[in-house]
Amino acid sequence: MIARQWVGETRESDADTYRKYLEETGMSEIRSTKGNKGVWLLRRLHDGKAEFVVLSLWNSLEAIKSFPGREYERARYYAEDQRFLLRLDPHVTHYEVLVGPAQ
Image (cartoon, rainbow, N blue to C red):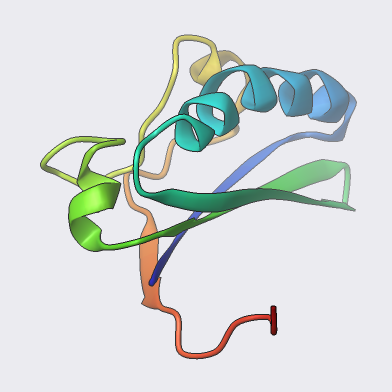
């Protein structure tokens, strides 16, 4: 299993609006992509900013490529991201999942 991590930051005043936007765009699309095993949205408020982490789990790197395309190590942005985000980091991070929750 592979974990994909994206991190973005907004102004704290935009945190709730951006959260809703993320749920309607990226989170929804990730959930509906074949090979996705789950997605979490994390948020941390600090110093007047809101840091968001989207962590998704995937069956394989091949499954991940169904979401952003061939350049799977690049972040996928949506139309309004530029309006909210303080910077658009082009990269995401992938991790091999070694241990997960017991089921």
